[in-house]
Image (cartoon, rainbow, N blue to C red; front, side, top):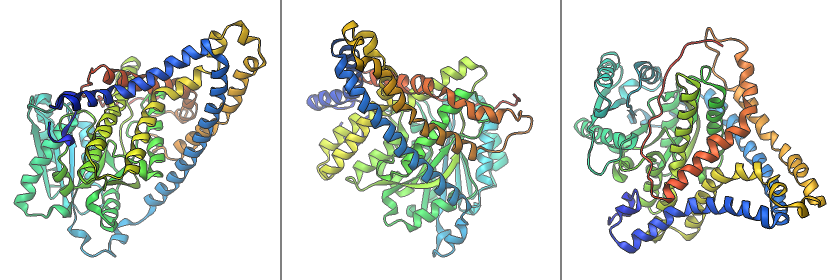
Length: 510
């Protein structure tokens, strides 16, 4: 493949030497994580003193990092609450011609039921942006069958006249070169949108496209806030715009462990909003339609939401960034008809997110191919990506096991030392300070909970506090394990296919 921007895996590359190099980069994330855990076991057996002297500063480093990130989380929460209170339309009135900006919303769906689709469309209908400047596309899949098609017809009937234009598209199945999933569906819908917009003769630079998961519900002023940031940016055509995903749609019905996973995802995105130099587009996001067309939305891989950022980054020689909006959109917590199905679905969703490790070979290879990006940017983004996915897979396991693993494997000679006696106590004391992060999570979660639905027990609110007792096992089972799973799959060339998280609605009280 001559255009490195379109690479999805090593086999896409025609040049043998470059293909081998890309394959090496694919092996790298899993190899680093696997080597880390292997050496942790070996050194706990052969050199337990070394491990003991390593784990103490390592735990201290993570306590400091937790404190640092928690402060970012608090700062972001305060800015988000402030932005929710701002009258964004009033701010826009001071900007000439803001009403010329159109909002194009693409909602790719698969087999979600009508209730999920209706909630998202209803939130768009109830948003404060002028509806005569909104184009909504419900992007359906041919492979979803007759039921999905009927939902599309129902959506057209109920919402067809609520916006400037409302379209339903049907993405054909089995198109050569495409991967099954949200990315290929979104790319197809974008091409259909272009045909409509060309007929309407709307300038591309006057359109902001938002690619939302089908369960995304916008807060009333989202598009006003987005438009303000777009029009006040110094270089809006070289920027994407990222809201904060909060998983609130069904949070009162979902089980405790799913709520903890979802809240952790929200809090991580809040921390990233305070570090815009590291922010990458995630899940539901917005970008200029002109850029969307110039770059070409990725249709050949699973992780389309992050790839569209990196593809734009390389397309414009590193002159591309993500602007944090400090404004939320609401999405679904993983839930299913039974505990075990929810457990399995949660793991699969986390593994799909962790499959974002495919960006590491894409980044490293792209940095070698693109000579115009400054070296400092190459070093910075490479180290952030590698460290991030390494931490995802290894950090929780190291913190949990290295405090006592030398005692198990180190032998009697080590176990009779003062260091062995004090190691678990010392690491326990150090990590107890990490409770600061959990306390912050508890309070912020309670402060931003949506109203309790009718019929839900008052006691359920207490479970929103005690759910955080599940945090340690959640970090391992739904953090380290799926991340390690994804990296090992990539390492052995077992490429992950798109898995669509089922979305349901339940009405019950507990």
